[in-house]
Amino acid sequence: LASSDGFARRSGEIYLDTAAEGLLPACAAEGAEAYLRDKSRGSPGRQAMFEEEGKAKAAAARLLGAAAEDVAFLPSASDALNLVAASLDWRPGDQVVSTDLEFPSGILAFLRLKDRGVRLEVVPSRGGTVSAAQICSAIGPATRVVMLSQVSYKTGTIMRELPEIAREAHRRGALLCVDATQAMGRTPVSMDGVDFLTASSYKWLLGTHGAGIACLGAGLLDRMRPAAAGWYSVDDLFGANRFTDFRPKAGAAQLAAGMPNFPAIYALRRSLEMLEAAGIPRIEQELAPLMAALRSGFCRLGLDVLTPAGADGDSGIVSFAHPEHQAIGAALEKRGIVVWRGDGRVRASVHLYNTVADVEALLQGLEAVMAEEAIVNCTKA
Ligand SMILES: Cc1ncc(COP(=O)(O)O)c(C=O)c1O
Image (cartoon, rainbow, N blue to C red; front, side, top):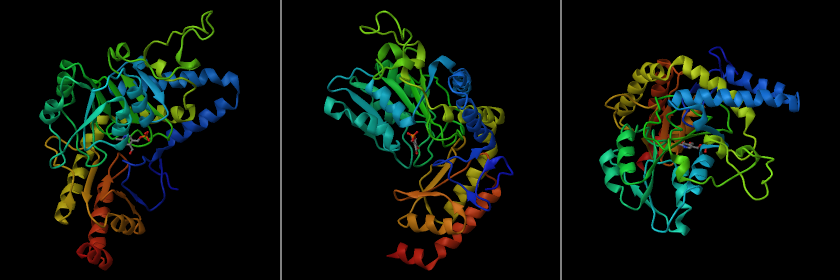
């Protein structure tokens, strides 16, 4: 492992797969060690853990323009989506509106309510985008939730019209639920109009596995009843009425039934603060030329680019479709270039530790790989 730039990575490797796994900064690794030190103190170490959790909530809240009380740490983004979906009072005939750019967890959390009569309306993308107008026209009187990723895991498409969609959803009495896993830490994310937001810890936020940020918008708690309760989520833990009643903690704290994943939280707090110091708008701005080079390079190679050209900036993801995606990804890996491959696509993703040289290496590698006999033949077949 080399970590000359403060990120642990395999030396000599070109790493362009943050959309799957972010690299771990030294500060996050130190955070995990600090957890082990506090844990080794036994119960007296708990106070430090609770303080870390508070600081991590505050750091996450600052990136979202929210209050620390609105943030909870759940085991993963998928768990957070499932918890909110299970906590709403569904009626047969209720509808959830989403798109075909959505990550499977955002769909599954609601699809599993099918046996309770909840219908899923999937708005199809055109050329890698779904317009706000398409989504708004799918929202009807039965819509209870609009489920959208701010950045699509598949195409990197940025949904910029979330506030506009939120207004229409609210006008119809529906909630806007946002999966910001592929956005937070790389592109500015805001709770403006959002009722529930989640983001996973181990990609652009540069943390370890084991934490899903959950952030509640104003008024959401009045419209849901948390589907879980435990000692960590109630105020009157040892109250006289504890066998007959309970009082949930105020704010998002009522979502976490038991001890959260402290090791993940220690690491995440430091990564969040590092990203905040770097400045998300600055990261976005400085990486924009790399994204443009990547996209135009893919086009120049004649690849079927899935990522729409961004009118006012890009996400950290560019992907292309190819029948030989597995062979292409494997051949690149042999050359020491890591991208994601699967589901008919190759996806490259760029974060603050990437350079123009990484992008050039990928494009050169890709050019060579695409000319390899095996891939040319497979593509023709
Ligand atoms: C948009 C999106 N949401 C959620 C996840 C999964 O996050 P978690 O493992 O924390 O549930 C992914 C992983 O690729 C993703 O791309």
